[in-house]
Length: 582
Image (cartoon, rainbow, N blue to C red; front, side, top):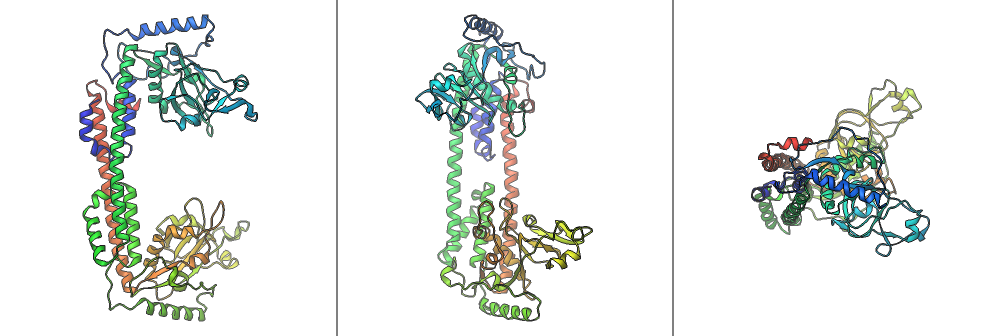
């Protein structure tokens, strides 16, 4: 492993999200392939070591310290997974150590257990999941003498290699003292104790591959038979010691690289957060402009991860809603005049029965508004300036409502799209009449009231005439004020988290139409709305380009990472692709 070259390129390589974990896996791969340290012809060959191991196993069996294992049904599959040095040999894992399972005493009897560190050490996979070191002494609970007797748990000696075989598969540790485990382990007690550290490296290197051999669907497990039959590349004992020393050295290097990467990203995150905070909280026009110039000047440094770009998008929407994205024009019609025109038009439409009278929005005062707005703006509730409705689901037991239907029907799931151009399903005219379904026009905004995951609060534009289900709120700009659609959409996108927070309920929190109607809207003059929307579109396009550049930079960095790692194999006549495939 060429550490100097790695350090030379690491600043660029580290832009790959999983650079250090990838490097750790590569080090382990090299270790068990005989490519991490040089072979020494003076070493005792692994074939002779294996004979010594077999002799030690036979002695332990004869003395009754271990039971004689059943003969394995050895398959040729994976018997030699890759080429190893001539001084090494392939064998099966059960040839170098006894494979030991575990057990759990009846959990209803509290006398079977005691606090960790006060009885016989007993480990579960959950204990290793919380453990960061290689050596482990106790779990959260120990077994009492009664608990050990009343379970199938086996007491294993210090130095045993613990490997979780389910829930999840792949945690590895070495016993710092005598231990037992539950049935979620297939551990190895080496016949020659000095082999334990290399066996641990083997498990860490091939944990993912071993996981692929598990059976089951909802509850996957690797059996003792599979673990016993695993092909094991055995090096000479002296080389095992050199491998362990080199792995420790390189893992320490990885720790330093990881710390440096985390420190750099932390500083960058704090700089980006501080810059965006200043943008969002500019005290006056001049300071805002200064902060904006700083952010734009350092944009490449401040947007190095997808979440940085998402934060920038949110800041753009925040500035738009505060009147800080475009300049105000004193010649614009004020928002108060606009609001009066909207109220008058709404009264006309109600009088003409073109919209239905619904529950009025509550009164609010300026103490409720979340921030100040320019003097030409005003505050209003969404339901005051639009017509808000919902829909329903026609009876599924009536085929005449659904069969051969041609009228698009939209559910809340479709609000994940920016523009909805096709129905989820189609209903008939009979369904529309029977359920008094309203047909909403293109340009209507659909807000999800409830649904799975983060569905609620999503907003989409309706691109077709359609009806909707009861899980959507339809926000319809009034006739004559349709151009407000774009500004209202970006405002609802900006308020996504705030709108979601209005939902109530337990396992399935819900919004309702009235809560959507009472969303507070910072209302600019119409002409400024147009300028805001145009500027947001322009800046969102910039964000799209930044995202594309970021993806390209990460792809280039990943290529450099793979090239650097491949160089470590070049002298051995093996390609990185061959390593990855095996």
